[in-house]
Amino acid sequence: MGTGRLLSAEYFDEWYSAMVGSPVKDEIVRRHLGLPAHLLSTSLLSWEAVGEVAAALRLSAGHVLVDLACGRGGYGLEVAHRSGADLVGVDFSAEAVRQAREYAERLGRVARFQVGELTATGLADASVDAVMCIDAVQFVESADAVYREIRRVLAPAGRVVLTCWEPVDRGDDRVPDRLRSVDLYAGLNRAGFADVVVDERPGWQAVEDALWQEAVALDPGADPALRALHDEGVRVLEFSHRIRRVIAAATAS
Image (cartoon, rainbow, N blue to C red; front, side, top):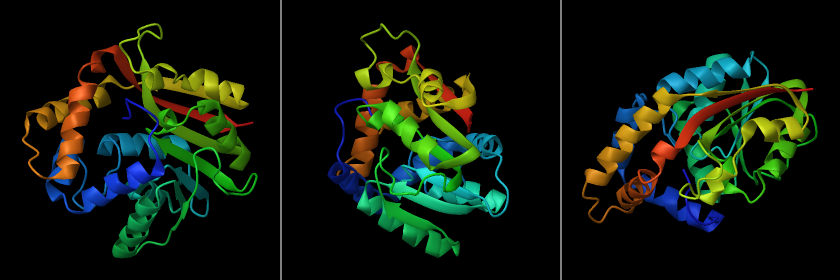
């Protein structure tokens, strides 16, 4: 979720490396999110939520989908597979990109994964039909720069779907600053998108809270991925009732 300082690519390289040796961590996440055994989750999108994201993107076969901050590639590969779209995954962690490429190869699916920033993807103007960005816009100093980059790479009438968390009360300093600054509706409108819709998903949040409760109760031992899950659960449960889970969709005008 990201609750403290801005985290570097090097931090995430270590984070993703730790996951390789932690099947227990992946089992806990998959069980709570209802994910199939093959899907490598990076964030907290449930199987039901994956379907909502796919539907909101309105993809067809031959469309180009960008999974921005793709992590290990699981969500983007699943959405592209459902629609027949061509997938381009972008992440600033070289380790995440490496794992995503290996994962796609294991699944026998064709996709392109490349290192790039949320605010500088390296993609050409108006070159893609849709962008999904799962639980990541809080990882930059200026989310507006992310929305502008998404708008730049999208072709006219292209779709964007974002998921994240927003504060119930933006004046509540008990919510981390990074999440307090998230305002998907305002940001997408400022970037020139049309038909912006932001919906709350309390059911998603209830699933996440149950995951964090289990993570806090476990003994991570010497497993660094389990330790990271445990520690994040401790932090998140301090303010989870002060945030709301949201999904946003918009069209490039």
